[in-house]
Length: 104
Image (cartoon, rainbow, N blue to C red; front, side, top):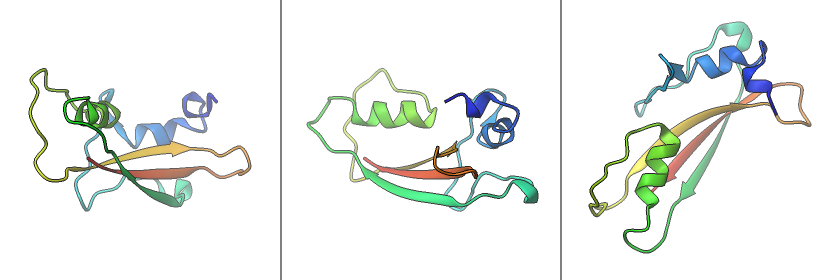
């Protein structure tokens, strides 16, 4: 469970943070790792659905490390937010980077 904070996991965590803030990656950007640390990226598309005003957009913004607006406003259409998260599955000796595409 503490792999991300271990010396082996620290470079992967550093690739998604900048100055203790989660980096916001653009559409064509990805976390950059040294060639000897290259790992596969596993992509998931997560559709967030629910009633109006219950906090779907705030949840996605919190997970992405963005600021949450204190004022309520309707999400027009669909907003796609991409979050990268490194992990080391227990059944594998090699880490992976999850690319989570939140569709809100």
